Length: 92
Image (spheres, rainbow, N blue to C red):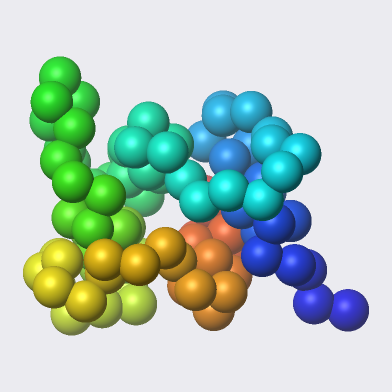
């Protein structure tokens, strides 16, 4: 059986040393920053970039996008994107 979106989010959170959440929520800016760091996407952590930029950068670094243009990443990660991120973090 395929993991749920919540399970994937929590797996990713644990992979980047963030805490699990019982309720279903999208990633905070801090969690996205930790994911960016884990996949090698450099960001200024003293002033975090907008969430769409961090989502685009994460997907770009794991090979799911051709660039880090945030134009179409204004929504939370979709299940297939979460699966790709979880897989990339498992491989590290």
